Structures are given as C-alpha cells and as structure tokens.
Length: 527
Image 1 (tube, helix red, strand yellow):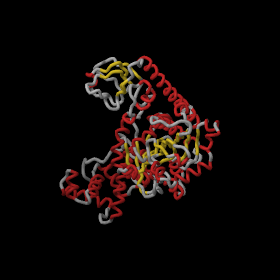
Image 2 (cartoon, rainbow, N blue to C red; image 1 turned 45 degrees about the vertical axis):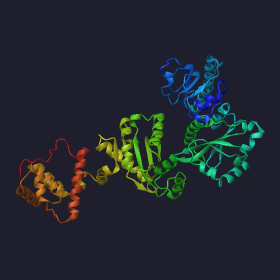
Image 3 (spheres, rainbow, N blue to C red; image 1 turned 90 degrees about the horizontal axis):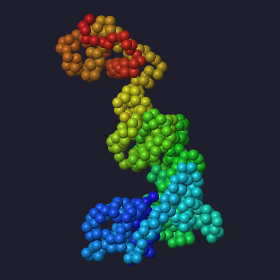
Image 4 (cartoon, rainbow, N blue to C red; image 1 turned 180 degrees about the vertical axis):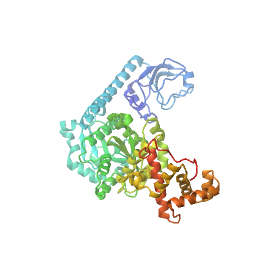
C-alpha cells in the first residue's frame, strides 16, 4: 500500500538534518516505495526519491505532487527547499541503510493490508479486522453503530482490565447522554474525514471515522487514546481500515440483517409484498433520509449478458450507487433493481438518463425506468413500471438500451385489452368488416379511415397524406359509410376505432394475429 509524506517523515525523523513543520506535508496515502534518483533531468513520480545531491537543473522543474524527495544536498541558490516536497538528510546518513529502513516500513504496512484483504475475503469477524490492526495503531479500536450500540472491539480490551471501561455499558450510556447536547459531537455526524472528539465525552480523546450507508451516518470507527498518543498521520490509516470495515459490514448485513435493517432489504420487502403496511415502511425509510415528500423512480437492469455472476452483479450494484447519489441498488429475481431518490439526487429523470446512458451502452445493460412518483406508497408500483418498461421495450424497441415506461404505455395498454379475448374479438366489428372488404376487393378503405381519424377528420389533410384528389377521398368516405356506417359525431365510437387500429398494429408487430399468407390492404382499385 502507499503511505503519506507525514507518516514517512515522522518514521525517519532521526535521519533528517533539521526538525520539520509536519503541517507542510500531505497526509494522504499516495506515495509509493523508495527509489534512487537515476535520471538527473527527470523526477520520478509517486515514490520516495533518494539521492546524495539534487542538481539545480532538476530543482528548476516542478516536483510531482505525490513525490517525496530525500537528499543530503540541494543545489539551491537561496538555500530554501521546495515547500512540502523535500527533506534534507544528515550528512552522515547512509543512503542504503535509509533505503532498507523505508522498505521495511512499507513491508510492515503491506503485510497489514494483505491481512485485511485476506480476512475480508474469507468474511472473518469485524473484531478480527480490529485485532490485526493493533500493531499499526497501538491503541484499542471500537466500532459502534450510530445509536452507540457496540458492534466490535479490539481483543486487547478483554485482556487488560484497565481498558474495560471502554466497553462498560454504564460508561457508554453516560457518553451518549453527554454527546446528545455537545455541539462538537453533533457537528461531527456529517464529517467524511477523520476527526477528534475531546476526552471529556468518554474519558479519553478519540480519533473517529464515520461510516455511511446510502449517505446516512450509520457507524463510527473509534481509535481511543489509551496506550499511546495518537500521531497526526494516523487519520488516513484509520480511513483505510474503515474502507474494509464498510465492505464487511455490508456483507454481514446482507447475510444476517439482525437489528440493522439495510435499505436494500427494506426496499426488497416492499416490492415483493403486494399488501404492505406503508406507514411502518415510511418510518423505516425516513431513518435513511427517504421521506414521503421526496420524489422517486426505479430502474430494472437486465443481467442476462452477465451470466448472473454474483461478483459482477454485486460490483454493478455498488457502481450504480457510486455514480447515482441518493440511489440504492440490489439484486432481485435475476435483475438489478435501482431505486433513486430524485430529491437527494437533485436532478430530473432526464438529467439522470443523460448521466448513465453511456455506462449502460458500454456495459451492454438493457434498462427499464419508471415514471417519477412522489412519496413511498407507490414504490412497489414504481418497480412494476420499470419491469414492464424493460419487458415491453426489449420486445418492441430492440435497438434501444434504455426504455422509459411512458414510451411503452400504449403497448402495455393494448396488451391488457387482450388478456381475456383474442384480437378479432376485441377490435371494432366495423373495422374488421372494412378490413375484410379490402382483402376481398383490393380496396384501401381500411387505411383511408385510419388516416382520416389521425387527421382529426380533416378531409383536405387526409387526401394530401393519401396522395389522392379530394373528390377521390370523399368518394371513399361515402363508400366507407355505406359499408360500416360510422357516426363521426360519436366520440366513443371514434375512440374505439382508434384503439382497434392500435391493437391491430400491435398484433402485426408481435406476429400474433396476421398469418404470412394474408395479404395487407393495398391501393389496387376501388369497389
């Protein structure tokens, strides 16, 4: 793993020519293992650069942001070293010994990181991650829920009676009581970087790192200043550990929810139960900042191209949550379901779609998306819309990657009309008669009536669309009236005719009504 400039300079302080102001150095973990300077005209990047002497020509060039330079001599006319990038070594410092010392330092942290990864892969306990980190922090670690419930603690607390006050329920309650009214504590709840809490809250100063679940503060990783003073470079290391704790907490919650009910489990319950007490769900969703006045939508992502690989789908769920703030993604019935709190996402559906369309296309993911809703009572129907959008869109708009429910509503409505009866028993008998007349006599009355209805009963516009003279059109209209007697003043009849046209077109697209031998109406003559 990479280390910070602050940590490195503190570990080799005895080799430096002068004491340093550590505030000028970065505490981010971005610097790699040491190398000796071999090219006097070029700085190495993201490493510790060791040299006996740095020439003035090289000092004229900008030192890379994540490079730390350690040298005995710097050829600078002013004698001033570049701020926050360089440290001068003592004249008697052995560079090979320093190099080996730094390598051992990196070995130590690499071993810790490898052990964290190994324990995570075998889904070990939360305490095991804290225990294997004691050699790094040299102080006890605690993991608490947002409500102060203790989830795990370092094993050394059990071994040393002097440390057991850290897990004493009475002390925890007193700390909770004090914290509720302490402004420093209240301000810390939204912090994303490590921070210190004063010793008057719990009896010892604490370095803390907040863990968030879907943007809501849910856990606190605590390093207590009990055995050694906490040094400035410790914060990023605690964040590194917090990243592993976050992953293990997520896996643990999925396998055995217990008292902490994850948002994805809650949403999964909602969409899987037709009858649900939404007053209870509303209260639980509010704990995650999903309120009844917020706007929501849902996406269903087709996973067939993924081969249903659990690791890939888990990655996609996390990735969706990263690229769509205010979202919650989970697997359900062979698909990935993504609920988006549009209020917290702070954009419209159009903005959301523009943001993710390239990712969907590049990842070969077909997606259905619901219409936006307000409140949580219709979240299940929101999911149903997204599922239907994907289903119908995949059948009728195969060239698209993303299907909106509003774009397939007509197809859905038409298919609902055919639930109990076949096409010819649902459509208008007048239209079926007209269609049959066209088939037998090679006329074009079926299409003529359709164009007339679509043109809002405008004879001139209809004739133009059909590329015929107005008198020819009026002749056809007269023949249509003789055949099926349409009352063009009856709005319900006209609506029924238009629905019938749409159903018949849908049946052609779906290849469920017309046989291959049945000819389409053509304009081959008038009868």
